[in-house]
Image (cartoon, rainbow, N blue to C red; front, side):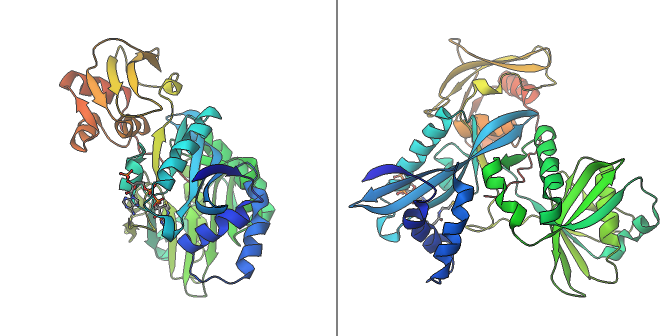
Length: 396
Ligand SMILES: CC(C)(COP(=O)(O)OP(=O)(O)OC[C@H]1O[C@@H](n2cnc3c(N)ncnc32)[C@H](O)[C@@H]1OP(=O)(O)O)[C@@H](O)C(=O)NCCC(=O)NCCS
């Protein structure tokens, strides 16, 4: 078996049949190949690797160069996707080898974190990834928000086709990349595809000329559902403006189904407001995302509320971040340095990644089997890495 990097154009002959067999209804219509080939201009910056035998691609993996906010610091991120093996070649270790190779290449390219959507989290747990929260949906009748119809809010909402407001929409995502923990975006090459597809309306909320919120949506039928993607807001005013806009659909749709993060509490959006908030996780299609650190030193400079904390940890069994480090707080900033001192905590990559992403506290790291932490270290690590749920946004 030989591993080879393929260009975007070569993906159609190598990765398309593997991916389409793995992820799409099949057999697939011949026309799908042309549609895929036409999309490959948006994959020019993706790193695509295939494992070949006798000139035939039997497995493939890819990573998009992306960026992600982790506790306020923006990192270069490898967004892993297109992971598939020909059924005849499965369980021969092809993806294991491809994935490690890919992560090394992306690390060499400057990526300090990586994320993906797993078909089964335990598979990627072996590669150091740890689970992040899946998005929730809030489903409600628009009349539940009728109080907002009477509210005089300082701003307005415009409804536009995505193609017409793409620059504003994209600028908002870039603003949220700087402001929202966990938020991730593609590079410009891949992002360009979303200008054209899929067919969506976008409600854009502005206040004083500034975009304060946006949500892409579609309506399935008169009297049916308004199905909305991620609620993207810079704060409470953006949220109120967009919910007010949905409230105006009271005689048109019976339900609004909106995608939200774990930090949203829809039952507090109104008095007597009936809402179903759901977070359904199923495999292989509806898994929460996973992420891992590719560098621990890259966390230096991350803001932290901890004062005078210092702890030595050993990260074990990982080819990227294995080793001993001192983690400390200096004037509101995290400092990560190599250390030779005796460690007070032993963590796997998943364990330290869980702390860095704010999804588990040190005791949960221990109970989940991601490390050993003594009581004093648990206190220091909790102070350095308070729990804070990330919102990934990008889907890949
Ligand atoms: C999932 C998939 C990509 C695995 O590819 P593969 O080439 O068979 O994987 P490997 O042989 O490299 O397996 C790596 C390790 O994971 C284990 N493994 C493989 N498939 C597994 C599965 N479905 N569940 C749990 N473990 C699995 C292997 O036993 C191996 O363990 P080892 O390191 O202890 O030897 C392949 O089965 C596939 O294409 N599935 C359909 C598409 C899909 O779900 N892709 C993933 C999208 S996120």
